[in-house]
Image (cartoon, each protein chain N blue to C red):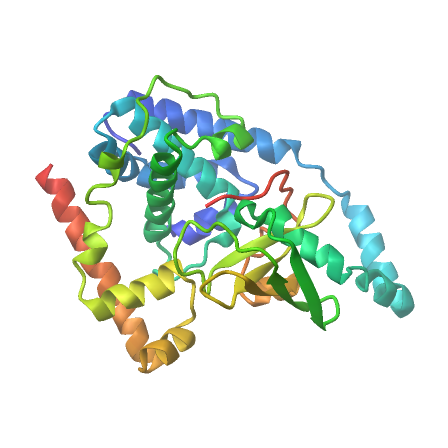
Length: 178
Length: 159
């Protein structure tokens, strides 16, 4: 099976590769936005913006989750949500840049949309949360992460793996419970 | 394949069409021209050297806000560590980041022709000091992916 990383690498010259990545993640990203906004139209617009940003910034993707783009896409989704709430309007810059026409009647973003957005990350043990944040968000290498955490690169790799696994399990449980 | 959502499928169609249009609209350099440029660069070392030594510290500084919206208005000042390869850049004004701690954050840089020409990594949590790499060096530093280098980037990136 083609990995997400391979699809992203091909997406710069192959729109179908990007569509395959979209098909893998569109539903979970939509569920993420719908759970926060409780509005179908706003969730669709935010999903469109998330994937438009993903295509435009695909060059920033670095494979650090075994070929999976899931953590990276959810980081973009979170950022799109947070930025929309801060600006009190749905983010649309990437959609406009790409020329995506979709535009719906959606409510004004409000602070309630951010409730619980970081709960999954907060639920991790402190050393696992730090490892995931430094690796996935701050883009440190395992060597840099190890130096920062006072451990070995091998142990740092294990912490990141355990943190991502715990996040996946929690998000899967939450989705199943909805 | 997605099950159960017509709207998600329609959105997927729209995104796929928009991406296809964007790919199709990119200017393509003829293969013969690329080959000729490569031959000239290999055959005439003086020309290759002159062609590579084209970027000034001012141009590198201008590449930061051109690549990243949050660096607009920060007035970067760059100093060459290795000419045309590595630069140390300090912002006179603080950026307005989306995250509290910017140390380790990476951002692409964009040249005056609106193409990605490298990338920078923040050395400090306040986002005022950056180590920047031009061209392939930014790819080797894993700041940008190889597909991204040279990409058309008409407006500074966000997020």
